[in-house]
Length: 245
Image: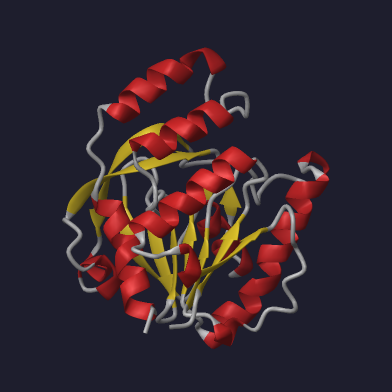
């Protein structure tokens, strides 16, 4: 099969390596099934021929697309510019795409929707999510329960459904948890690759990144360990199984 292109936006090696391991594990992939690019190390994506891949999976990251450029580090600017530069090709050609967390902000921003910190930010932890009518019939959500728990933790969110998108998953604190553009371009606010162990790694890596008071890290790790979060990974597996052929 063609490999999946895995684009990572995390400049922290520990977090990036753990995220990549989670994506291939939950997606039922092997390293040989993927072409991994860390955008903090390689950001010239114009050379990529997207038709050579089964699909594109974009991970999360500490950056915020809604932050003014003056607040972004040079690395954050390069990463954001690189992944945004791919979106015209992805949406125009309806290339299979799954954007996780930061990926929904990138897709919505590209489509002209508002992404901001005004509403819908969520603290680190798990949240109740629910399928919409459109979500119940979408093949990427096949087998996912009507209501399920998912790990979240974000400062910004999509404020209104982008034009041309289907609304697939919602939650009370953040309505736009999963959307689809066209037939094959998906994005989630929650983390489909994450389990409690993955979130423990991120809590330790990002304890000083402003998501929560640093002294709350151990408490948050305990809360995550107590969660039973299994449904979101099925979304990642369904995406891989649908497009790997």
